[in-house]
Length: 161
Image (cartoon, rainbow, N blue to C red):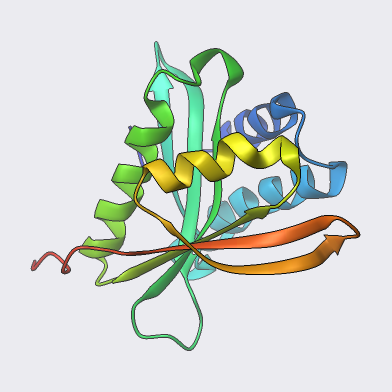
């Protein structure tokens, strides 16, 4: 697991997100743009990353950041695991590491949004297994019959530095 963002991560993220078969071309470009923003601006971009590697190759990643105008709330923007490594605990390790990093930053809540489409049922089940509760459903948010489901989790008390 590493949190340093490097230039090769741009293509690693593109490959991971494309490889899921879940995301549109526009969504893939947004995922890549967040990596590029961090490379250009560092932590000032507001985007933080964790990369899971096996044998020196990125097999999963997460992107998260503080929610503007809140005191301790964070969004999980992306968590993606390569198909061949799903069900192997990589997602669980990534989300646990994100939660720990956020508490280290003084965060207290983590919010995640995903689609209500049947294709995303395993994703929603994952968040439930990880202790997240469904906090909101916005029907037809992304498109007709494609709602936004928001999950939330109160994190442990922030670590003291």
